[in-house]
Length: 318
Image 1 (tube, rainbow, N blue to C red):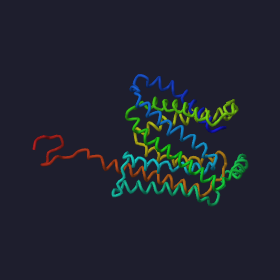
Image 2 (image 1 turned 90 degrees about the horizontal axis):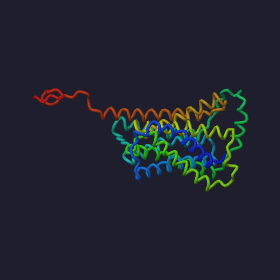
Image 3 (image 1 turned 60 degrees about the vertical axis):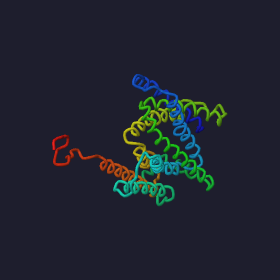
Image 4 (image 1 turned 90 degrees about the vertical axis):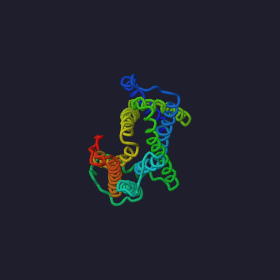
């Protein structure tokens, strides 16, 4: 399926799914939508959804799925640096929490490098599965050239940067427009218009736009309703509660889940490098989260602090 058309149908399905739910639950409590807020949401959907999804679709054509999954795990590192640059996240390397954050990011970088550049021996799990031979043959037929590989890696990193910028900027938009469900719906609606214009510009064959009762319709419905509709709302909720870096640091778990599901459902052969890289990514994830927890604990004042001269808290008599 054409990637640009797929993104349009995906966003349209998400909009149709979310619109009635958002109107029913938040039509009375939603703040007024000013023109400046609308422009911010428009640019947010353009940068973080339309550009990111279109670029990653093209990048996957130049690379393999495993390389795409590996480069997408640079998202926590990019989000961390953008949050620090925009002063939304603080790092003090002299504190224990700051050192844990730096160590966690370093582990994530090491995990990505391990998955991308070290294959190692294969771990043959459930090789009796009937899909294994066809899947391996497809992987062997898709070996990109060095030039194509460089293009694909650049596009995947560009997509991750766009997604990281969306995570960081969405936190500031939520402060002025806290209705998370309506915000998600507006982003999906605006992204539908944007992705339609992109698809029309790059896709002129009418056959590419056809949907039937097949895997195309199933993929559009799943990605639109479950991935875009459900996940985007949950991401907005997490960003509001814990910040963009907390959300971005959970993306390495996708690699771990992918390895497990690929092995036990599709019967794929998993390389040792993928397993080691996934362990490094998850270790880096919890180092950063541990560092954030330590910093939050150090910033909280004690529950009961005595005043000078022995007077208890709240006592004005000395």
